[in-house]
Image (cartoon, rainbow, N blue to C red; front, side):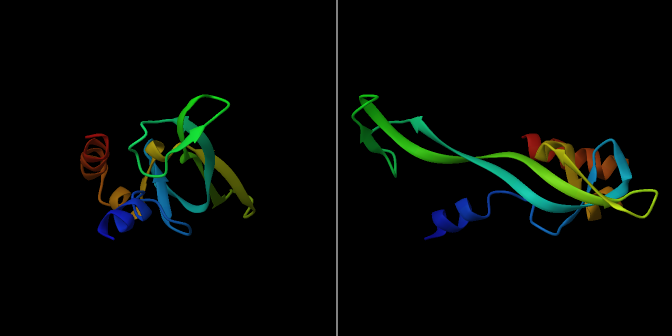
Length: 112
């Protein structure tokens, strides 16, 4: 049951969350959509969710990949615009507000 919880919450980013781009810590975006793509990939027969694909003649499973994060923001004309980023380009707004050093430390922790 704990493994299932860990898988469900493996992404730090959530819908409606305030974020900043790593190159512009003072500008706030709001997460609108998490773009995902589901693919069938080859795997070992012992892996959870695996099945034998007759056509490919191997074991496969379905896996969901994060493609990007669609964010919205208020532009200089007070209109709402959207932009799409990779999740590694964004950091939580609370972290961004603590300054460049804290933001860089957070980014390093995400990579490792």
